[in-house]
Length: 158
Image (cartoon, rainbow, N blue to C red; front, side, top):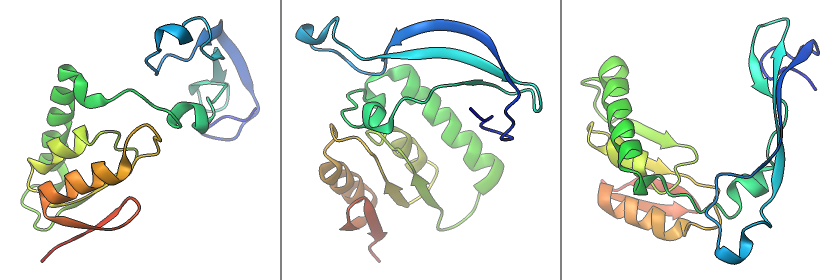
Protein backbone atom coordinates (compact mmCIF):
# COMPACT_ATOMS: atom_id res chain seq x y z
CA UNK A 1 0.00 0.00 0.00
CA UNK A 2 1.04 3.58 -0.67
CA UNK A 3 0.32 6.64 1.45
CA UNK A 4 -2.81 8.42 0.24
CA UNK A 5 -1.07 11.80 0.57
CA UNK A 6 2.58 11.39 -0.51
CA UNK A 7 2.72 7.90 -2.15
CA UNK A 8 5.33 6.71 0.34
CA UNK A 9 5.47 3.03 1.21
CA UNK A 10 6.87 3.76 4.69
CA UNK A 11 3.62 2.97 6.50
CA UNK A 12 3.38 1.40 9.92
CA UNK A 13 0.37 -0.09 11.62
CA UNK A 14 -0.92 2.21 14.38
CA UNK A 15 -4.04 0.28 15.41
CA UNK A 16 -5.86 -2.79 14.13
CA UNK A 17 -9.51 -3.08 15.12
CA UNK A 18 -10.00 -6.26 13.11
CA UNK A 19 -13.00 -6.93 10.89
CA UNK A 20 -15.87 -4.50 11.52
CA UNK A 21 -19.39 -4.53 10.07
CA UNK A 22 -20.17 -2.00 7.35
CA UNK A 23 -21.79 0.68 9.47
CA UNK A 24 -23.23 3.14 6.98
CA UNK A 25 -26.36 1.18 6.17
CA UNK A 26 -29.66 0.51 7.89
CA UNK A 27 -30.31 -3.22 8.02
CA UNK A 28 -33.57 -5.05 7.61
CA UNK A 29 -34.21 -7.54 10.39
CA UNK A 30 -33.48 -10.49 8.10
CA UNK A 31 -30.09 -8.97 7.14
CA UNK A 32 -28.78 -8.77 10.71
CA UNK A 33 -25.72 -11.05 11.12
CA UNK A 34 -25.32 -11.16 7.32
CA UNK A 35 -23.89 -7.67 6.82
CA UNK A 36 -20.52 -7.26 5.11
CA UNK A 37 -17.40 -6.89 7.24
CA UNK A 38 -14.31 -4.86 6.38
CA UNK A 39 -10.88 -4.49 7.97
CA UNK A 40 -10.49 -1.39 10.13
CA UNK A 41 -6.82 -0.53 10.49
CA UNK A 42 -5.09 2.83 10.88
CA UNK A 43 -1.59 3.17 9.48
CA UNK A 44 0.89 6.00 9.98
CA UNK A 45 3.07 7.40 7.19
CA UNK A 46 6.67 7.95 8.32
CA UNK A 47 7.29 10.43 5.48
CA UNK A 48 4.38 12.88 5.79
CA UNK A 49 3.00 12.01 9.25
CA UNK A 50 -0.51 11.26 7.97
CA UNK A 51 -2.68 8.76 9.81
CA UNK A 52 -5.03 6.97 7.42
CA UNK A 53 -7.07 3.86 6.88
CA UNK A 54 -5.35 1.17 4.86
CA UNK A 55 -8.52 -0.24 3.35
CA UNK A 56 -11.10 1.46 1.15
CA UNK A 57 -14.61 0.07 1.12
CA UNK A 58 -15.54 -0.59 -2.53
CA UNK A 59 -17.65 2.22 -3.97
CA UNK A 60 -20.30 -0.34 -4.97
CA UNK A 61 -20.70 -1.22 -1.27
CA UNK A 62 -20.39 2.35 -0.06
CA UNK A 63 -22.81 3.98 -2.49
CA UNK A 64 -24.61 1.25 -4.44
CA UNK A 65 -27.52 0.76 -2.04
CA UNK A 66 -26.83 3.63 0.32
CA UNK A 67 -29.82 4.00 2.63
CA UNK A 68 -28.56 6.74 4.96
CA UNK A 69 -30.18 10.11 4.31
CA UNK A 70 -28.44 13.07 5.93
CA UNK A 71 -31.67 15.08 6.09
CA UNK A 72 -33.14 12.84 8.79
CA UNK A 73 -30.54 14.02 11.32
CA UNK A 74 -31.33 17.47 12.75
CA UNK A 75 -27.84 17.97 14.19
CA UNK A 76 -26.27 17.20 10.77
CA UNK A 77 -28.66 19.57 9.01
CA UNK A 78 -27.79 22.27 11.56
CA UNK A 79 -24.07 21.58 11.01
CA UNK A 80 -24.50 21.89 7.23
CA UNK A 81 -26.25 25.24 7.75
CA UNK A 82 -23.35 26.51 9.88
CA UNK A 83 -20.81 25.33 7.28
CA UNK A 84 -22.76 26.91 4.41
CA UNK A 85 -22.91 30.27 6.19
CA UNK A 86 -19.25 30.22 7.26
CA UNK A 87 -17.96 29.25 3.80
CA UNK A 88 -20.17 31.83 2.13
CA UNK A 89 -19.07 34.62 4.49
CA UNK A 90 -15.38 33.72 4.24
CA UNK A 91 -15.12 33.16 0.49
CA UNK A 92 -18.21 34.31 -1.41
CA UNK A 93 -19.99 37.04 0.55
CA UNK A 94 -21.66 39.52 -1.82
CA UNK A 95 -20.69 37.44 -4.87
CA UNK A 96 -23.48 37.52 -7.47
CA UNK A 97 -24.41 34.38 -9.41
CA UNK A 98 -22.82 31.87 -7.05
CA UNK A 99 -22.70 28.34 -8.47
CA UNK A 100 -22.44 25.33 -6.19
CA UNK A 101 -21.68 21.74 -7.21
CA UNK A 102 -22.15 19.28 -4.36
CA UNK A 103 -20.48 16.01 -5.33
CA UNK A 104 -22.10 13.15 -3.47
CA UNK A 105 -25.04 15.32 -2.44
CA UNK A 106 -26.98 12.43 -0.90
CA UNK A 107 -30.52 13.73 -0.33
CA UNK A 108 -29.69 17.41 -0.94
CA UNK A 109 -29.51 18.50 2.72
CA UNK A 110 -26.28 20.48 2.22
CA UNK A 111 -27.70 22.07 -0.94
CA UNK A 112 -30.79 23.15 0.95
CA UNK A 113 -28.56 24.98 3.43
CA UNK A 114 -26.37 26.46 0.67
CA UNK A 115 -29.48 27.88 -0.99
CA UNK A 116 -30.01 30.12 2.05
CA UNK A 117 -26.75 31.96 1.21
CA UNK A 118 -28.08 33.29 -2.08
CA UNK A 119 -26.68 30.59 -4.36
CA UNK A 120 -29.29 29.96 -7.01
CA UNK A 121 -27.61 27.65 -9.53
CA UNK A 122 -27.15 24.48 -7.55
CA UNK A 123 -26.21 21.19 -9.19
CA UNK A 124 -26.81 17.98 -7.19
CA UNK A 125 -25.00 14.69 -7.81
CA UNK A 126 -25.27 11.38 -5.99
CA UNK A 127 -24.01 7.87 -6.62
CA UNK A 128 -26.63 6.01 -4.61
CA UNK A 129 -28.92 3.58 -6.39
CA UNK A 130 -31.25 3.80 -3.38
CA UNK A 131 -32.06 7.45 -3.97
CA UNK A 132 -34.23 8.35 -6.93
CA UNK A 133 -31.76 10.68 -8.64
CA UNK A 134 -34.23 11.90 -11.20
CA UNK A 135 -36.79 12.75 -8.50
CA UNK A 136 -34.09 14.36 -6.33
CA UNK A 137 -32.78 16.44 -9.23
CA UNK A 138 -36.29 17.42 -10.32
CA UNK A 139 -37.27 18.42 -6.78
CA UNK A 140 -34.13 20.49 -6.20
CA UNK A 141 -34.19 21.94 -9.70
CA UNK A 142 -37.82 22.99 -9.35
CA UNK A 143 -37.15 24.51 -5.92
CA UNK A 144 -34.23 26.64 -7.18
CA UNK A 145 -35.42 27.50 -10.67
CA UNK A 146 -33.26 25.01 -12.53
CA UNK A 147 -34.16 22.69 -15.36
CA UNK A 148 -32.73 19.19 -15.68
CA UNK A 149 -30.65 18.68 -18.83
CA UNK A 150 -29.49 15.12 -18.21
CA UNK A 151 -28.56 12.59 -15.58
CA UNK A 152 -27.34 14.55 -12.57
CA UNK A 153 -27.05 17.77 -14.58
CA UNK A 154 -29.09 20.94 -14.39
CA UNK A 155 -28.94 24.41 -15.88
CA UNK A 156 -30.48 27.68 -14.73
CA UNK A 157 -33.68 28.94 -16.31
CA UNK A 158 -33.40 32.62 -17.22
